[in-house]
Image: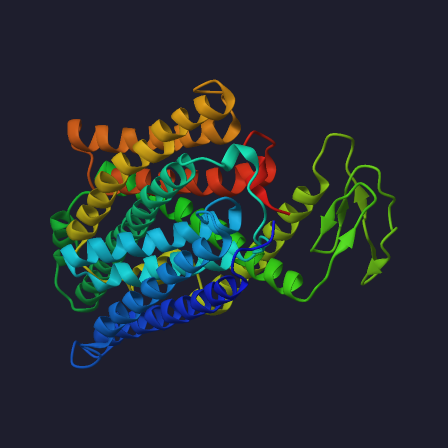
Length: 437
């Protein structure tokens, strides 16, 4: 397939770079605005966060123009592979944020949603950006309907994740502040010779609720696991981009092309056939028949780099738990953050249901003759839908608010990320064509 307009495809790349730069500037403005106002007591940086929203509007405009330019340059709607789909999801997450920001004007949410958008956009470049011919299964009007609406719904889920994570950090920060204040008060009372004051203060202190006890015992640990997983994804993305743009590749006779040094080789390879790095033979081990050596190699690097980043941040930056270090710096009204997360799920759920399930089943019937195949990606999309269904059910009928619903929103977006990343890369199915190299 010869691209219909190479100039427009090149223009799309430049517009996308411009959008990425605008998002990056917006993130820096949000962080400086929210943290700067807290440090200065609200006397400075009053308009900085507002400038961040302006930068995000510019970024989403350039991003949208890039999508339109690629559409016209390629001749088909640009959501046919992982590079295009993840880029469109990044665009959707920023559109969703701006819609909700119009309603709530809470800038701190932008400080977390904007880096999510930046990560998604950066991660899309792990995959080949070249325009390739559409396979027959994708030559349908259902391509823009199914994929675009699914991505838009997931964009709202990304905002729900950001607001939920901020809620969890904020309430943890408030509890740490109360504990610190109680400890300081007890210490002051013990220092002064006030008989029985310490016992009276302890008696007056509120009893720990079951929710607070669960958070103290398990929530803080889950938060650390969450940050480790985030750093695994960030570390792999940075590493993969560096090696891909540097032109490194190792090609095996089986057809597997590695862009990271092949510690774990594919079936049929020989140990050390690609030389060595720092005395380690490439590959050092070879997988048995039927195993995916390339993907296990990717997982090995992801876990190692993520662990290194987590250790460095915890040791030299946070000087303790990363979650607690962030919690004491997060501001905002917890109830408002909880409401934003709920509103984002409430908007994204019907959009995702329509695009990710209903239109997907109609397209499957048209392309493959059946509405449902229990394909891995179909299955995990259904699991994501069930998680958000549970979120809305428990929120509306059982009154689940606060931490319970926040953790469900975090879990739901984790399933979404595994559906669009893990399933494509690690599991073979009818949607494997979207995985790229």
